[in-house]
Structures are given as C-alpha cells and as structure tokens.
Amino acid sequence: MKHVIDETLLRRFDVPGPRYTSYPTADRFVEAFTERDYTQALEQRRAGSMALPLSIYVHIPFCASLCYYCACNKVITKHHSKAAEYLRYLSRELDLQVQHLGRGHHVSQMHLGGGTPTFLNDAELEDLMSMIRRQFTMAPGGEYSIEVDPRTVTVERLEHLHRLGFNRLSFGVQDFDPTVQKAVHRVQPAEQVFSLVEAARRIGFESVNVDLIYGLPQQTPESFGHTLEQVNALRPDRIALYAYAHLPARFKPQRRIISAELPSPAHKLAMLSASLDAFNEAGYVYVGMDHFALPNDALAVAKRQGRLHRNFQGYSTQPDCDLIALGVSAIGRIGATYSQNAKTLEEYYDALDQGRLPIVRGLALTRDDVLRRSVIMAVMCQGAVDFESVGLGHLIDFKTYFSKELERLREYETMGLVKLSDSCIEVTASGWYLVRAIAMVFDRHLQLDQDRARFSKII
Image (cartoon, rainbow, N blue to C red):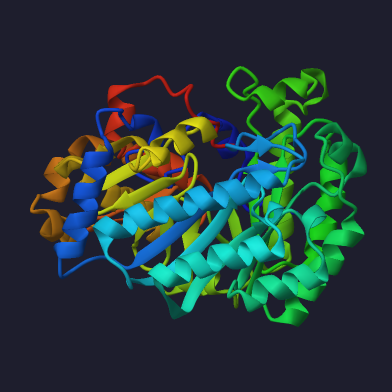
C-alpha cells in the first residue's frame, strides 16, 4: 500500500513547533499587558464601525477524575458546589466585559472547553447559556460547540444540550483500547461512545468530532490500528488526531505515567502514518494539521472553498473573529491584542472580588506581527499566499520583505512540500501534512529565538 506521505519526511520534521492557534503564540504574552490595555481594546471595538464578527470561549476547569496525559488547566474535584460558585464569578466577569464592550453584539461562534464542561449539571448549563444570551445575540447558523466527556453524559443530557442551542459536539475518546485507557486513568467502553454518537446524530447535531491521541502508554501500532478501525466504523463527522507530548516537568499529572510504557519514536511515527492512511482510505478530507473531516462536513467544504479559518480552538468555518474569553486561564483576542486570564481560581476570584477583570498577561501586536499573522494563517488555512494581496493589504513588497523566508522555502520546494512562483506560495498535497513546519518559516520570534523546547513536537 502506498502511504499518503513518505515516512522519511515525517521523521525529518519531527521537531518542536507551535500549533499556531495564534501568532504570536501564547508563550510570547507579557505581564506588561494589563487589564487597562484590554479594556481600551474593548472600547475601541465598541467605538469602531468595522468590527470583526464576535466569538465566545468559556473555560470550565472542573473534572471529576484525573486523566494522566492531560495538559489542560483543570481542577479535579468531586464537590459539585464549586461549579455553582464558579458560575457566579463568570457572571461577574461577563458583566465587566459588557460594561466596556456594550450589549447586544451578534455572536457567530461559541465554544465551551475545559476541563470538562459537562461537569456542570443541566440547570447550570442552562443558567450559563441564559447569562450569555442576556448580553449577546446568538446569530442563526452560527457554530456553537461543547467538549463532552462520554462518561458524564446520557442521551437525555445530549437532548438538553441540543435544546440549549449547541449544534456541535466533541467527544474525548483518545483510545478505545482498555489497556491504554487504564494506563491513562480514563476508562470508557467503546460501546458507550458508539451509543452516544448514534444518539447525537438522531437528535440532530450538525457535526460530531472525536479526539484521538497517539503516543500514549501501552499503545502499540497494532493496538492503535484496532482503534482506527473502530473510529472508521463510528464514522464521526470530524476527527482530531493529537500527538501525546510527555512533559512531566511541566504537567504534574503526567508524572503518574510510566515512561517505560510509552511507545518508541519509531512506533509513534508508525501510528501517525497508519492513521493518515486509514482516514484517507475511509474517505476523510485532511483539513490540516491534525484535523480530518468527511467531505460533506462544513469544515471540509470550507477548505475546498478557501473559507477556512483558525483560532484558539483550532480550525473553524467562521470568518476571522474577535474572541471574548471567559473563565480561568481563558485566552481572548480583540483587534490587534491578545489577553489571558489568571490561571488559578484563587487569582481569578480575587480579581473579580476587587471589581476588575482577571487579565494577567497579553500582547499588543506590532505591524510586523499583524503582517506575519496574515501570512501564517494563509499558509495554515488556505495553503497559499498571494504576494500581491498581502503586499497591498500591508503596504509592503512581499518578495523583498520576506526574501530570507522565500530562500529557505526553496529547500522545502525540493522536498515537494511547496510550489513557488513569481506571484505566490502554494502548499502541496504532501506539504499539508507538515503545514506547521512551513508556517514556522515566517515566525520571526522563532528566527530570533531558536530555543524550541517550549513547544510539543510537530509529529
């Protein structure tokens, strides 16, 4: 069988690199960016007549049990009363945001992440949605998604989520193999996931995503191959395939993972290669990075039509949006600024108790940052960069401004990853599988700082 991409290329680019949910990336945020900078950005948006569409992200940090691989900002607790307290503070934060932004703005995209958003019970989820709807207008045809731990929902709960207005679900599966599930402390029978996905389709959700992780303890190419067969039988609308990054020094839960049980780099590469082949044979469209979609899914359609976008939640069908971020550690974007909330509940609550937004760091983008962001997002989303349109939009001569980057891309052209002409850069079919590496060429911060250990590996 011919592989969709040469394993030699995968091995060549098995290096650390950003995921480019933003540019500059979040590791570049600084504490010198304060609440005052953020509120000024909100007020500038309020005063402007050409504001971007609006998106909302809400971070729910709570989980009832610990998954050992997890690198998310979360709070492990069995005490459900913590959720009610958290919602009260979310309401305060939302009120403070709206004081500067104004009420009634149309929202075309919303995502609840975590943690485990379905840690909230039905009444609490209803309260949260009512809170948001009091301040914003949810646009018809928008993208409203929620991350779901299959262990925390029933068919009745899925029906409730649909009534609340959610039209997309993302199920955290990671691996169907019971031995792997036990090794990462996340046991969930495959039958449970199949039943819930079938119910979600029957209820009428527009899209169901399944998250997978390769490189987990006790995984082998053979065991993961069986998981791939089950996923293709499940046939979700979208698949997100992530590489496990073992960083126990940074993420305490990972210290419970036995390093000797992790697959070798060669086995990890084999799992990735097998995944690409399996999803390709099953008819999935490779959207980019680690995302796959059925040909009729909105994400695959957006890629075909050149309407793909990227934000802090990954690829999106929605136009480039400003993002209001609510909750502990949440990252937002307003205009040419990024901001992040306090990472602990104590800090988050303390700021709101003092009547101020819990912004602890962020970044005001320079002209060069905005320019490079547009180029990197064009690479990541459209797989093409038109020199004239970028030049006109940013008042530069593209080939002069990016002469060093174009020279470096000549090497990538010899590998078959890009095609260069006098007027554009085009990512090839093989290049899409290594699109992060191509985008990295335009990252000025990486050029100035070659210490890439801060990032997970591309493969």
